[in-house]
Image (cartoon, rainbow, N blue to C red; front, side):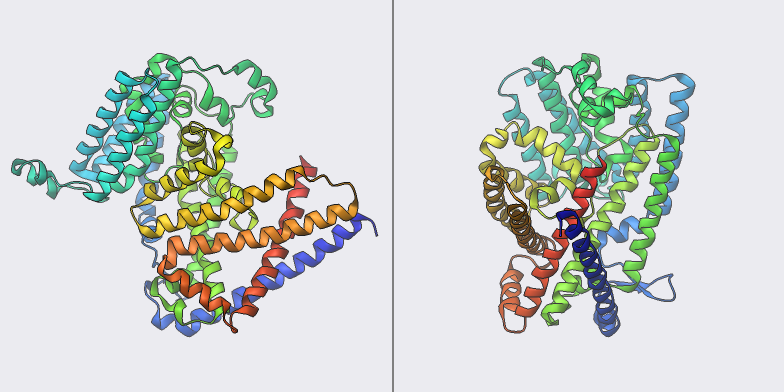
Length: 524
C-alpha cells in the first residue's frame, strides 16, 4: 500500500474517531448539566426553549448584556466618522480630530471624571517620548514608567480623587460605569508602541518598502499587509499629540482590542484599509452572528463555566473533570473570539484593519508556539515587536520567554495564579524548544523514517495539548492550590483510564491536525 492510500484510510478513521468523541462529550455534558443544574451558580432564565442560561462568567455577562447599546453606539459613531471623512476628504490629522472627539464622548460615559487620570498619564508619557525618544537609553525609561503605572493602577485600584485633596473628593461620585484601570491595560500597550515607533523613526530604520511590495503577494496585488503598515516610515507630523491621543482612545478598539501598533493605526487613519471589500465586511459580520448563536447554544445547554465557578468539579469523576475542563477551554476560546471579532468588525467598518485574534480554532493547535501565535494573536505580534526582538530574539529564546510571559501575567492582573500559569507555560516551553531544535537536524530519507517521525510528532503533540490544558486550568480556573488535587485525582486507579483515553484522543486529534496542515500546504 502506497503512502497516499494509507493516509486516506487513516484520515477516514481519524474523522470517525473525532465524530464519536464529540458525540460522547456532548451527550455526557448534557447529562451533567441535567443532573447538577440545581447546584450551579450563575444560571439565569434564558430565551431558548425555557432553558437556564449560563451567565456565570462576568466578562461574558457584561458584554452580552450591553450588546444592544454597544451596537447602537458604534453604528452611530462609525456612520458619523465615515460621512465626515467622505464629505470633507479628511486625512490623518482631520480624522484624528474626529475620532478623538467621538472617543472622548465614549470614554466620558465609561469612566466619568476618571478620564482625567487617563489624559494625565498619556500627557506625561508623550512628554517622556518627545524629550528622551532620541536617546539610546529611551526604551529603559519607557518600560520603567509604564510598568510602574500599570502596577500602581492595580495596587491603588484606579486611585481616589480624595487622595489628592478633599476639594476633589466630589469627583469620586462621577467614576462612570466601567473601571478605567481595567481598560488601561490596553492603553499601556499603546503607550509603549507609540514610544518605540517614534524612537525607531528617529534612528532612521531601514525598511525597503519597494522591495517588500515586490516580494509580498498581498502587497503586490494592491493591498497592504500588516508588516508594511507597521514598518513603513511615517512623516514626523504623524507623531503629533492629536493623532497620539486618538490612537490611545480609539473607540472601536479601546475596551478589548485587537492590539494595533501606532504606525499601522496612523497609516490607515490617512488611507482607509482596502483589504476588505464591503461584501467581505458584511460576511465577516454574519459569521460573527452565527458564532454568537453557537455560544448561546453552549451556554443554554452545557453550563461548563458554571461548573468551574461553583467548584463542583471537585466532586466529579476524573472523566467528568476532563469533560468540564475541556469544555471550559472551548467556552473561553469562543468568548474571546466573539468579543475580539465584534470590536474588530467595527474598526473594519470605520476603515481600520487590526490583526485578527484567534485565526485558528483552539482545537487545531498541537504545539505551544502555534497556540500562543493563534490565541491572542495581536498581543503576540506586539510582544514579538516590542519585547522579544529588543531583548535579543531567538538568540536568547530560553531566557526571553520567562521575561515575556511574566510580563503577560502581570499585564493581566497581579495574581499568583496568573504568575503560576505563566511560569508553568515557560516550563512546558523548554522541552518543546529542545525537541524542535533536534527535529530540525533530523533528515527523513525513507517512508519508514517519515512514518516514525510523524508518529513521534503526534505523541509530542498529545503531551503538549495536555500541558496546555493543565496550564490554562491552573491560571484561569482552579488556581495553583488546585493543581495538586488535579494531579492526584488523575494518577489514582480511577483516573488512569481517563488519562490514557485523554492521551489517545489528543494523539488522534494531532494526527487529524497534520492532515489539515498538509491539505492547506497542497492548496497553497
